[in-house]
Length: 176
Image 1 (cartoon, rainbow, N blue to C red):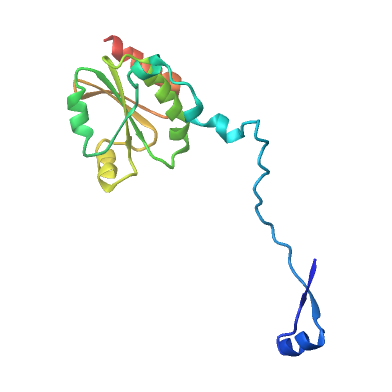
Image 2: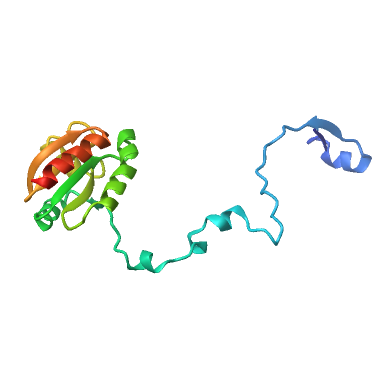
């Protein structure tokens, strides 16, 4: 691709005489938006929005089953509050690959469990200095590490992202 450019020293003279020098310009990639679809068809983004999904009565009435995300300051209070249940505590970090892999499984286990008997919680070991100190004091050396608490006392531990082993551990202690 080429363009015309006037020499810088003779810019004014080039305008009057009509002489210009030819230079080559680099091609530059430019992001161009896709063509807008026809009016009758819905765009891809319209189909994927939550606003376009129907809301059912069951979804509104059902309580949300979640994995509690706690901080180091809330750790002891959380265990005391849920002392009548089996608490499965996941010690994780946002940069940890195995922690990211087991997170959806933990959400699934929490959704399938009875919240009156079993509670799931997560604590980010790298979020603050307090959480790092807590993890060190609890003996966390590898991530993810799972601690199971009953009556606010540690009953079992597991290290690694092994869902089958975690389910066996939870089953073992929820029966007792």
